Length: 352
Image (cartoon, rainbow, N blue to C red):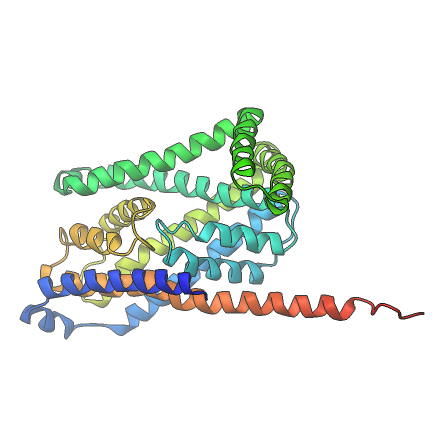
């Protein structure tokens, strides 16, 4: 980990801990200790296992979308890529750092850069579609609860939803008008070549021209012959988000509270969409404030701070730990492959 990554990591963790500290200071009292007497660690362990299992759904989504483009990605390796992506997402605004990590991981497995980018973009599209459908179901089940939401949460959700819909529309335009989008991309890259002249930049732009063709061809393939991959990927996406959202309900049960499954699904949906807005590293602070504001509507104020602490521990700090382990394993794998290639190269001057 270089100095910049360390700085972003500590900034993200520090801001999250500061906000959690404020939340606990404002919510913990004598009633909190009484409520914690009924704490059941078994359900917290189940929440941790479910959180880990959700990553399995994500890994299989990568393999299924890759399979739709006729690439074979080992599920075990896909799981490593997913865990490594968690660390990058935890220290970058809006968790945007995870996408380049997944693209690079797929590229190292033998995919073309353009095809790997298409797979990751389709992940975002499936996220948007599944979250939107879940939102419709939750709103129909709990329509009146919208009247209790703070205006700031509604505005933040609206901005994030516009961002998500905009991405889907942009991809739709790219599929229908690939020439125009490619022309725009190459115009931007041409400006970069003039602004930063050099052989390395020139080669990168030349490669980007070919990879842009691969990207648009893959996006078009997903909407035609690769639709089966989108279907299986969509099912994995639904499994992933359902598992993620149920973690909060299990934590509530561990704290001797009702699971509030429907309400929790709606709140988790709102938080997930708000966290897509790139404001803070790993959305630290944003997630804690949003969760506290929303769950205070259904959970006793004395226990809401402890709930947010446990929820953030499983969905954020756990990401940092398992993400760091996954990153180290991926690097170890790449070093092993590099040594194998060096040993396989013939020594100059050898004769058979």
